[in-house]
Image 1 (cartoon, rainbow, N blue to C red):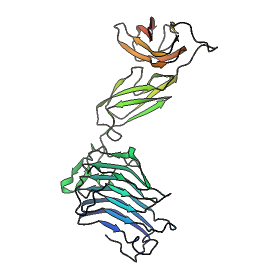
Image 2 (image 1 turned 60 degrees about the horizontal axis):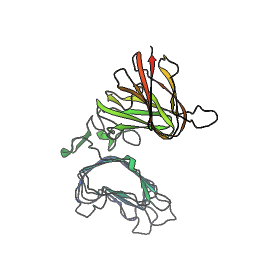
Image 3 (image 1 turned 60 degrees about the vertical axis):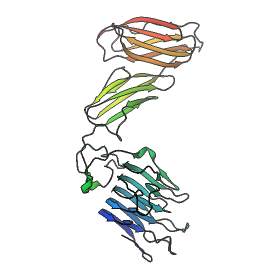
Length: 371
């Protein structure tokens, strides 16, 4: 498909189309720059298209060279490219162009030397082009470029799309594909005509309540996991804060904690400020660990302690067998007086011990949980 000189069109929409076995570009609109004209079209939309065995770019588009005229809007989205030249798209001088929701799989060497990058989506000075939500699989080790533009690296993945039968040009995404839901619009990546299955993957939505973060291992494939994946969650509070506990699909203070993703889950990690209890701001002259209050408790209690010097400090809770069941504090702390409140809803009634370690100081006390 070629747009030649002296052609001026309005809005050009190329949608729900398949292109296969082209010896050169599949769509070529490049005469605008070569002849004195300010445009060949008013806007270009390429959406829900599939390209197979294209020996140059799937789309090669030039805007005009006149900086005084606005570039035509260009949107290329939800496109599947397979078994084609390394370079899928070349957009030149296309300020404001948007390329997103693309699958590029199984690239091969071009017969025309179009192998320097996976795409180059050029904007103009002050009017960038935008590239995001791209999956690449079995492609040449070259860059996705956006000269005078922006590439959202956080939404560029390298995931097996799980085509049903790519050899026979059946690019249906299997139900196990992690490309479902990865698009900018929460749809699947690629040509949506192939996104016909109900996805089987599961998600984990983490809500962070307070200053801190949660490390997840293993990381998601895109944004989801295979069903029944066991993930480890490690809550890490910011400086001068402590981890108060989990809420939602899990509860308690166990940290790190393992979670089986047998279904999609929502889990909240709660972080709170470690508060000083000395009203005049004077530093303590000695280390001290106070009795928890209330005691007995159910399920919340508060432990106060004093640190004479700064240092790595741990406040640990043990059961009668000496197993650590909670770690309300485990971080570098300044000298001062502190009060830490936490809950232990997941533990059974009984006697527990809590231990403060800081520098060479160690102190242990007993407390009672009564439900």
